[in-house]
Length: 586
Ligand code: HEM
Image (cartoon, rainbow, N blue to C red; front, side):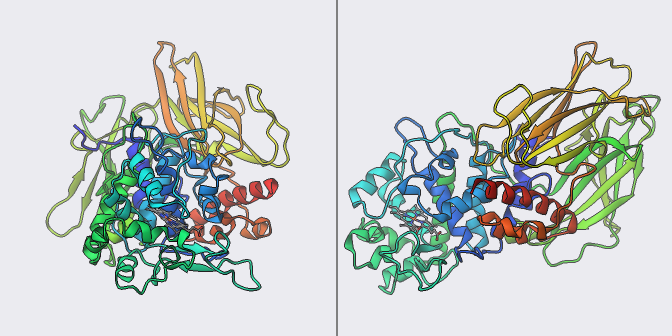
């Protein structure tokens, strides 16, 4: 049974990235590229760079033994001539902050191709997750334009693509972007008096469309890889004509181009090492429960849960709509709703920007969120919850019950308390990581994580697994277990005592799994808690950082500011880290 049931953390993360364009704590990936953006510093098509990046990571696949493919190894392969140019380094830094426990770097690279294609008007490529990252460079073997046709055919055959598929894939890639003077000065003359590259685009549109094919067929193309006076460099001509132009003719209509590209790009992003099991296609959840947390806020024991509903693009949200959360007590006479349930209509409504994700926008939707924060009697606690949405149109309410039984609150024995937790940024620190290892130089964040432990469970150990996969330069993930100790500075409250522990991290997306091992040996877990918003999350104004920006990420700062101020705040503090870290490396 592969029907979606909450909680499905991997699915939820992938779904949020694809359809909301952002990771769980709000930092937006899609806004870097959408709508069909160009880099302010180099004028490069970001969509083109992202699609090309995925191809180069994939194309070292060896179908004979199932090695290589889309595995993120390209992060360690940018020194090679076959992966040369600013487009690759910019893209790598775009993607740097997004991998986490449930989404690999390779999943992000694949998603980059999905976004790049969709945002510039191309087909929607079905997206699956579950790719597994390589942590070292793999073998080479990406085609370069000076190589002959047989070499290219052999490379595509090795990667599992026939001659016709080689033509399709190349035409589908070469509808975006082009050659740049900084990479191929002999083919594209540099513009005088500027470091900004000159582009010779593959076709005359910047959209993902069939014009690359029609201009090739009608002889008007200016694609340097077709018409260069240097015959050696006419790789697209050799490839496109490799079967007497049969495949190119089959791609000539807009519909045929779109559907063929959809299929072949799907194959491209799903070409993964042998043994990697991809998820099913990530489909849009019509009603999504997210940001669920039982915790303390300002001394009040609260349950937080959000319901995300679809809204048809460019239509107003029904003002008559009433959204209600229901829940069951965990303890006492009304345990599991034996007697009564409880309910609340106190929600804050948030209508999302329709530009959140090119995929959702193309499907004709945006989102509206209903965010509930309800005080809960800790002695009764909560065992499960569900929602009802009444449009007040006479048809009666629709219940969202997770396919029947409601959404479970798995446990209330150990809880993450973000508002009592904090993070402090240290500069030029020479702190040592727990467990020894190399001292941390540069920028480091010190996190104090607070958990509430329910009295009576008498845990033998409370600890967290602190994980960060998103570290500059892609060293192996930061992953450490830290014991949380009783914290006598925080007064016990409503049957809970507080524990805390600290961890140092140089990465961009620390998440914690908090565990409590009860006296009876049962382990209770709060899985995958984000740390972007802790009580004292520092707000750093953008003016602090513009001077340090040399990298592509600097140019993306303003884009990440799109949306509400809450997200802007996160985006800025996140980008500061990127900018400062790069400037210390440069
Ligand atoms: C034999 C096969 C191929 C060769 C020799 C080749 C070669 C090239 C070259 C020389 C460039 C210009 C890069 C620069 O100026 O820095 C380029 C750009 C590009 N290639 Fe390919 N390519 C091939 C196949 C593909 C495939 C299969 C895809 C994707 C499906 C692809 C996607 C792109 C994209 C999107 C760009 C534009 C990048 C930008 O504007 O930043 N290429 N390719």
